[in-house]
Amino acid sequence: MIEVRNISKQFKVHQALNDVSFTVEQGSVTGLIGPNGSGKTTLIRIMNGVLGASDGQVSINGLDPFRETENVLAFCGTLTEQSGLYENMSGRDNLIFFAEAFGVQRAKARIDELVDLFELQEYQHRKVGTYSTGMKKRVGLARVLLHRPSILFLDEPTNGLDPDGIQMVLRIIRRLNQEEHMTILVSSHVLSQLSAVCDRYIFMEKGRKVEEGTEQEIINRYLTSPRIEVEATMANGWQTVAGYTPEMVSANKAVFQLQTREDIPLLLRQLTERGQVYQARITGSDLESIYFAIREAHHHE
Ligand SMILES: Nc1ncnc2c1ncn2[C@@H]1O[C@H](COP(=O)(O)OP(=O)(O)OP(=O)(O)O)[C@@H](O)[C@H]1O
Image: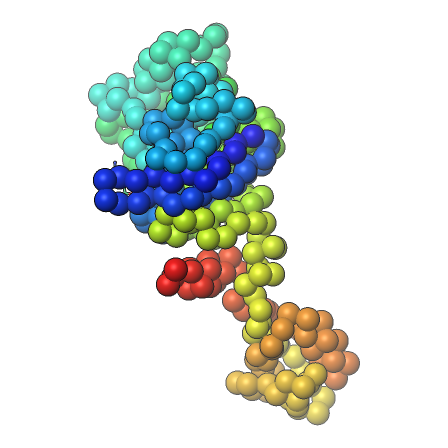
C-alpha cells in the first residue's frame, strides 16, 4: 500500500507540490493524471526515494522511501520517461546487465520469460540505439520487472507510442495487475487512454491534488447538466418531453439539454412511451470531457 500524506516540494522559488495526500490500495491500478508540469514526475520521484519532500510523509508498504530506499526499491519497479537502457548494447544484453546489478535469481529464465511477455524475440539481439520508441518502451518495461516487483510506477508509459504500442502497454498493465496482483501507479496526461485499465484516478493541477475517485464517482460529481442526443422515430413528431424542449431537431434526431442527472431516466422513459428509440447518447460524460471539466473547475485556484 502507498500512503502519501501532506507532501509538499519546493524547488528554490518554485513549489512543485503543495500538500498532496492520497492512498493507493494494494492490488489496484491508479491513474495519476495531470497536464505537463503538474507535479506527477516529482511525486513519483519522491515515492521512489530519489527526491526528499520539503514537507509531509510517504510510506510504501510501511517503509519510508527516502530513508529506506534500497529496501523499498527491492519491491518496486519504476519506468521513467527515459528508458534507462544502454543504447550501444543489445536489448538482451541490457537485461542481462541489469539482472546482475539487481541480483536477480535464475536470471536467464526470468529474461526468457520477459522476452516472451513483451514479444522481444525478433530484435532482442539488436542494439537498443536502433530501436523505435515502442521497442525501447517494451525493453524498458522488461527491465523494471526483472526483480518481480509488487509495486510498479509507470511515468507516462504510453508517451510517443503508436496506437498498437499503446494497446500493448495497456494489455501488459492489465495482465500484471490481474495475474500477478501488482499494485500499479501510472501517470499520463492523456486520460482517455487509461480509462481501460485504472480502478481509480488522482488528478493533479499545478502541484495540487484537485480530484480523486473512481471513474463513476468522478463522472457523478462533474456531470451535473447532461446533454442527451436521441435517435428515434416519434409518432407525433418531436415535442416537449419531461418538461424539456428538444434542440437541434431533425426527423430522427434531437438533443435535450437536461438540468440534472436525475432527469435522464425520466426523459428516456417518456421518450420510449411516445416512439421508437434507437439510440440515446449522453455527451460530455466520457472521461476526456470530465478531465476538462475538472481542469476548468480548478483553473483559477
Ligand atoms: N529538479 C528540479 N528543479 C527545479 N524545478 C523542477 C525540478 N523538477 C521539476 N521541477 C518543476 O516542478 C514542476 C513539476 O514538474 P514535474 O516534472 O513533476 O511535472 P509533470 O506533471 O511530471 O510534467 P510532465 O507531464 O511534463 O512530465 C514543473 O514546473 C517543473 O519545472
